[in-house]
Structures are given as C-alpha cells and as structure tokens.
Length: 213
Image 1: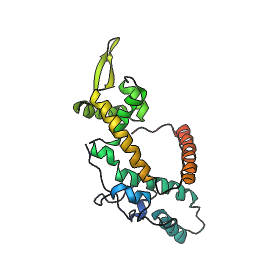
Image 2: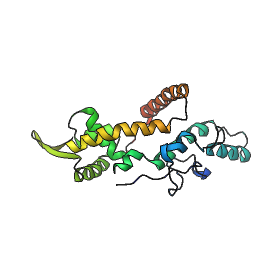
Image 3: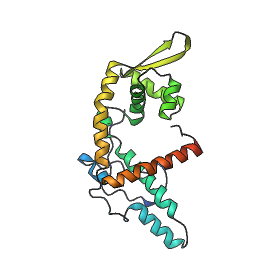
Image 4: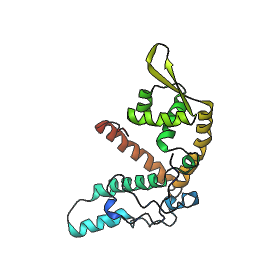
C-alpha cells in the first residue's frame, strides 16, 4: 500500500498541465504539518494561481478567446491534482489508499454485507478494481468474504472487527485533516462552495453517468 506523498508548497509550476485532469506537481516535496499549503499558507494570493498564469498566456496569444470555462474547470482540476498529490495523511499513516478506505467506508456506513457488485456501485469503481482492492483488504484482515447460502455464485463481503475498528479510528482523523485543508476559507465561502459543487456534480452525473475508476 502507498505511503502519503508530498505536496509542493508553491502550488507547482507546470502551467501546461493545469487544465488537464490528473496533472500534478512533483512528488518529492513534503507536505507541511497541518496541510498549511493546502489551507493557504505560502500559497499564491487570489488571482495569482497557476491557472491565472495559463489564462494570461492564452489571452496573449489568442485574443478574444473565452477562457471562462478554463478558469473554473482548470481550477477544479488543479485542486483535485494537488489533493491527490497530498493524498490523505491519516489514511497514509494507516497504510490505506483512498479507494481502499472507500470500500471499508461503504461497508461501515451501509451497516450490512455487500456483494462486490454493490461495492462497485457504492464506490463508483469497476468490478476489476474492487476485486483487486478486496484482495488487499482481505490479506490485511480488514474484510472477509463468504458465499451466499442461497446462491454459491455470489460472494458477500463484510468488515471484520479489525476493519470496523480501523474505519472508526481513521474517520475522525480524516475529517479533521480535511477541515485543515479547507481552513483558509471562511464560513460564508464554504457555505457557497458546497451547494455550487453539488449542483455541478449533479449535472455531470446526470449527463455523463457516474464514472468508474
């Protein structure tokens, strides 16, 4: 399982990859304690982020180009890349990846056994990805599989006691970490951001369907 990777303090300088999903900064720079870089410490001031520089360059070589969508989608992609680069500190310390924790979380929050197919739907993952992750989690004693007595072709997955303890121990620390990431935004800004993102996500899921990873 992966260890937590670092996040560059300066937000990265690879402007060409800013508008590309999955583009990320170098992996050899450490994440400050408390996720300070993500929370705003040492980060560029508003309007001076890497996307702003990309937009400026495009406007210089292509006057009249409508860069409005890039200023939104580019920043969403950039935030996602930086968050992915930093990963999730509590999960890394527990030896878990985010997709693995998502499987454990699905079993915990639904409160029942799930089939691999149900886990795939709950976590927006492919069947092959779920199978691979379950193999890892089973090897570590966090989940166990059993055959359905009514249909031996169907397997059911449940948390072990160790898996339940893992989720219950990591979840509060993970939420505290995410709060630290967002601590640079004030209350009203967060209150506006959540419903706006929810509306965008709902439209995308309705139009494109939930992508599987």
